[in-house]
Image 1: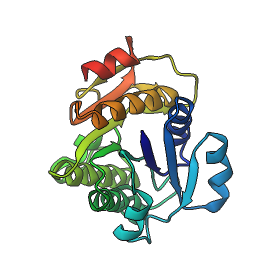
Image 2: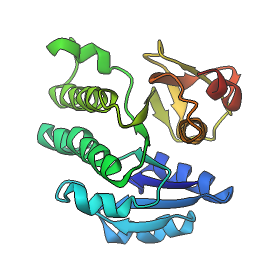
Image 3: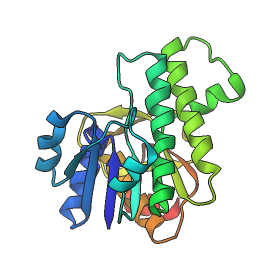
Length: 224
């Protein structure tokens, strides 16, 4: 399988890329900063420098040529303001979808976030910082855009609070998940399983929440 990961230097993306490469998949990571390329190469991932905030669909479509699936794992990151939440977490995800359709890539995995339903229909959750509200709104808008497309098989994964600790190999993967914690390593393992299902045409539920749990990853993905 050939996988292209947007935001290839992110923590989940690097773990996912390494997992996929280790089993023999061809993995390409799109990165904005060329200094990040050695980290991808160390994980077995080929780096392509592409700024999704300035690129056009045709440029990105060329990067996706021959891919079986794309993953959007990019994010504006801590310290960024509301405008970049929109330009990365929404607009770049939409750009990748446009490029995927142009390149004939049918399978798209969007890494989103728990909590997006709290801002649906313009709701303003109490006690949530303005920038985080902007982030949730950007993620929700990206989800809605992608899920409306007939030309893509889309799976939206909403991980709970992310942990930098070893994976347990056991999760709860369910549309109802809206809180909790989960190691990034387990998120990466779930992503790879969801990609396998998408590419096989056996689409899982369109939107899935993810937290730590008691079900082995393979079993959880198969039932999703």
